[in-house]
Image (cartoon, rainbow, N blue to C red; front, side, top):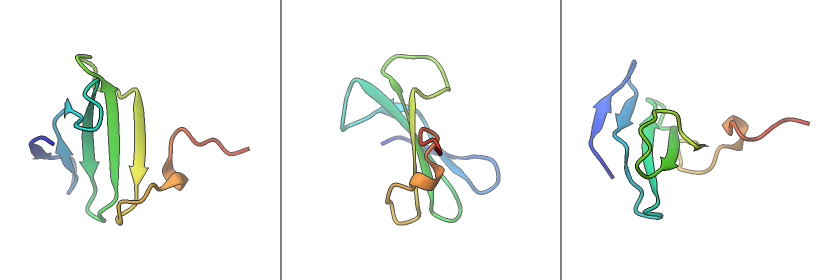
Length: 74
């Protein structure tokens, strides 16, 4: 997708890049030392670091809904 940089601690952070699955969006991935990750998406061309949508994944690449910021407990 894009170049990766060392983030805080042992996190790896990619640059914003056009998402190959939907070229109207850009994506950025933060990978943690335990293998879990956070994928962030924003509309193409937006100059903000704050994503419009984000999704957590566990170390196996499966959606980790326990950490999904859009999931609300009832």
